[in-house]
Amino acid sequence: KDILPWEGYAEGDRPIRSVGIWEEPSVWFNSCLTYAGLPAYSKLQLAEMGGGKPLPRDGDQHLMVCPDANPAASGPKDDLVVDGYFMMWGLTADGLHPERRKTYWSYGYNTQLDEGVEDRHSSRRVSLGNFKRICEIPILVEKIMRPDEYDPPYGPFMSSVCQSEVSWHEFTTRHNKGGHLLFLDNHVAYFTLQQILNAPRAPDDYNQPGKVIWNPAPGGVSR
Image 1 (cartoon, rainbow, N blue to C red):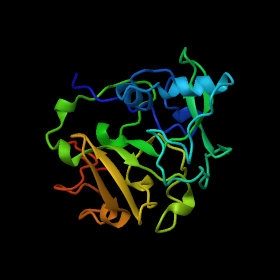
Image 2 (image 1 turned 180 degrees about the vertical axis):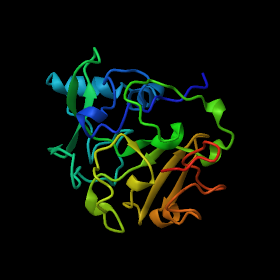
Image 3 (image 1 turned 180 degrees about the horizontal axis):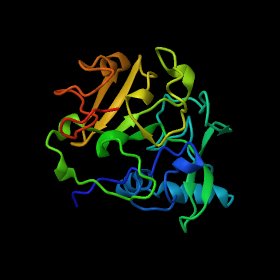
Image 4 (image 1 turned 45 degrees about the vertical axis):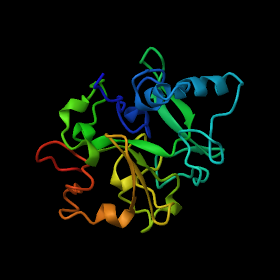
């Protein structure tokens, strides 16, 4: 209905930056799966927590798992990895209490779609009709799962690998020094990390009109 999945409150790497309520149906890691006719990610989590089937992870066949990804590994800070899974922060069903759960997804939501605004209190949804050049605007980004897959080396400016909302900083290099972007018009394209970073106005703005528009806000700086 012209409304994009919700990106969540924040990255999920700390209690104060939770992804929001785990069971929220509109958040991207639930809604993208249900849109594809699969169980919401939160249902997979609850099933495992109840003694059922383990969450999909590296080596498993699932929409959230890149076939070439390796077990998750923590970055310089804020990450906790247990048995190859990231332990990410969300909220209990009442929205009152931080709750850490296992996650393993090789993709993240383009945090610049809402101009990079991190709002821990808003469930603001974004309309597809807000954007004109949808063939150039990514919605999902293939992200790194461990610091040692980053090339050039994972730098101190990138504090955590465990993130739900991502941008070029977390773009993967596991496919011949690059990875894939899913655009708003539903096409997927491959880029190397250097193609992403070689934006004309980098490091102030990584938008590349005609190729990749991270922050579609008029005149917006895509930090």
